[in-house]
Image (cartoon, rainbow, N blue to C red; front, side, top):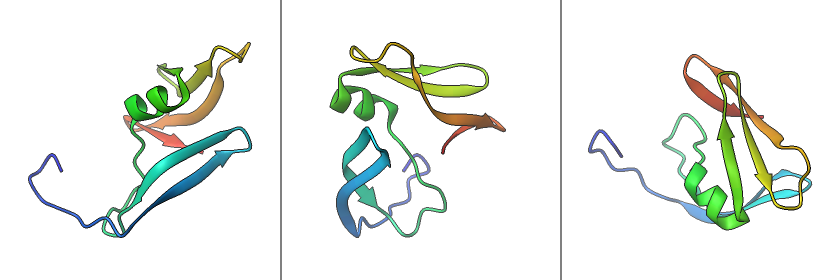
Length: 81
């Protein structure tokens, strides 16, 4: 982690965020107090754009006409719904 501490990964699996959005190779780290999402890994896995605005975070791939909102900004962090 950024602070130099280590946390153990207990499982690696798949998470269904929305009916059309599946994350592969997600780490289960019980010591974390929040679920973290790597925007770069998500973009690479889905071959998509991850867009951050002042209020929300969106994802859009070539098949989508409109970006899909995946999270809202609160106190400087983007929380995935």
